[in-house]
Image 1 (spheres, rainbow, N blue to C red):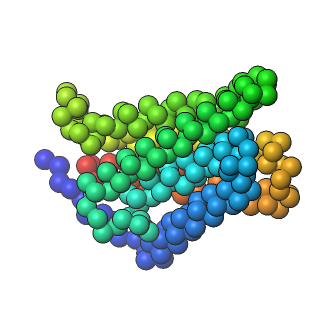
Image 2 (image 1 turned 120 degrees about the vertical axis):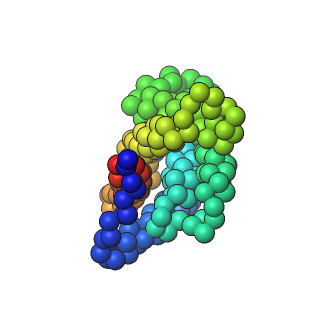
Image 3 (image 1 turned 60 degrees about the horizontal axis):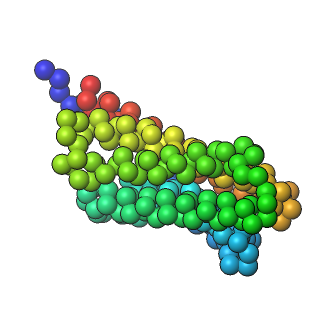
Length: 224
C-alpha cells in the first residue's frame, strides 16, 4: 500500500522568491499590456486593434488565468479551487474573444489593403495559436461540467489540460515575441524599449513554465 508523503520542507527564501516573481509577473503583464495599448492607440486605425487585442489576450488574460492557481501571489489565493476554476475559464474565454478579434482585425486590414495573408512566421504562428487556444478552452469544458467527462478520469484530464495549456501559452508568447520583430513595433520603439519588452514576455513565460511544471511534479510526488 502506498502512503502519501509529506511535502518536503524548503528554505523560506525559496517561497519568498517565488512570491516576488509572481508579483513581478502580475506587474509585467499589466505594464506590457498598457504599454502596447498606449503605443497602438486602439481605434485610430483598423490595424491598431490587432496588437491591442492580441496583447490583451496573451499577455494579460491568459497570464492572469494561469496565475490564479499559483500558490505564491495568486489574486484568488483564498478562494476555493472551484471558484478559481470558473474564474480561470472566464479569463480564458476573454482571451479567446480578444484573440479572435485581433485576428479578424489584421485579416480584414490586409484584405482592404490588398496584401497577402499569413506570409510571415508571426502570422502563421499567430493563426495556429488562436486555433489552439480556442480548442483548449472548449476541451476544458469537462473540467467544469463533469458530466461531459464520460469515461475519462478527471485527474488525467487535468494533467492533459495543464500540459496542453502550457504549450498554448508558449505559442502565445512566441507569437508576441515575433510580433515585437514586426516593422510596426521596431519602427515605434527604441532599442532599449524593444529589449525590455522582449524580456517581459520571456520572463512571464519562464514563470508560467515553472509554476505548471512544479505543480505537476508536486502531484506526482504525492502520488508516489
